[in-house]
Length: 208
Image (cartoon, rainbow, N blue to C red; front, side):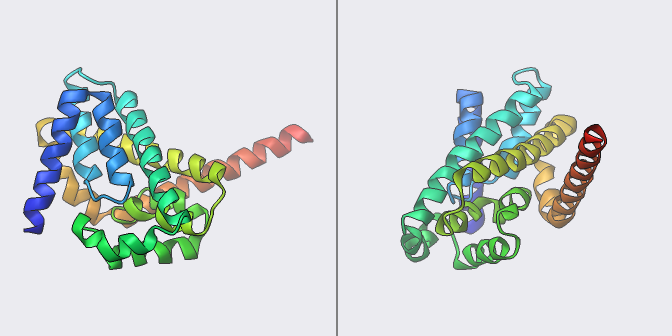
């Protein structure tokens, strides 16, 4: 039954994108980031496939996906900040939200703090729920917004790019991204660290 629900949600997402274009991408990713497990591994590769056919641009769908993630994350953040978490814990199973997934996001946020928003956006399951503990912790909205946009854009661009390159085989991406989710996050964190170190060194040289 769970598989049928996931397939139905994927069909729903594809229908949104096919009908409403960029706005459909924004809406689908907003739903996914508002603690509703609509699979981004379906949404963004399909959008990339459409980009390969000339309907969208790659950067356009990546940006639309990131904006959608931010809007949905604001909803989840607000729910966490206003005490609505208990409602989700009690009734979330009707939206396929499990206590295990919420606990996973809680532990990840507790370990990494604000940086969890950036890294968590590259991890399936965690990315869907990470805004909730951020709201509970009353994380400052400005860094929350910045980290959400950066992490979401990278994730959306990577999925859309892969979908564009795979063409009609875009659907094969979902199990691949889920299998290597940890490696993807590690590589992004490494690249970000290298960039920041390089930037700091450049600024120091300019100041001398």
